[in-house]
Image (tube, rainbow, N blue to C red; front, top):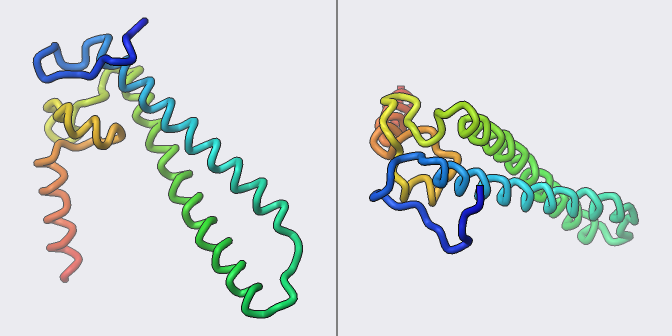
Length: 136
C-alpha cells in the first residue's frame, strides 16, 4: 500500500484502517532497522577495541564504558522483541487494541510508544498495582 510521507493517523478516520496499519508497520520497521544498525556498530566497535590500555584508570574507564554499552544493547535487544511482537499484532489484526480492555489505544499513545499494548488507563492501573504489591 502506498501512503504519503506526510500522512499522520488521526482520531477522525476509522481506527486501524489499512492505511493506519501500514503507517505503524513502517514506523516499527524503521525503528527496528535503526536499532539493528546501532547494534551492529557496537559489535564492530567492541571487536576493534581489543587493545588493552596500559594505565589502570584508563582500562577501568574503558571497561565501564563497554559494560554500559552492553547493557544498552541488551535493552535494545528486548525492545526489538517488543517491536517484532507489535509487527505480529499488525499482521493478526490485534495491533492498537488494549490487551486488557480490548478498547482502542489512543493514536497519540501509539505515536509516542508504537509498541504499547495497554491503553493509558490500563497502564496506570497496572503501575498502581505494581506499586501496591511492591510495598508488601
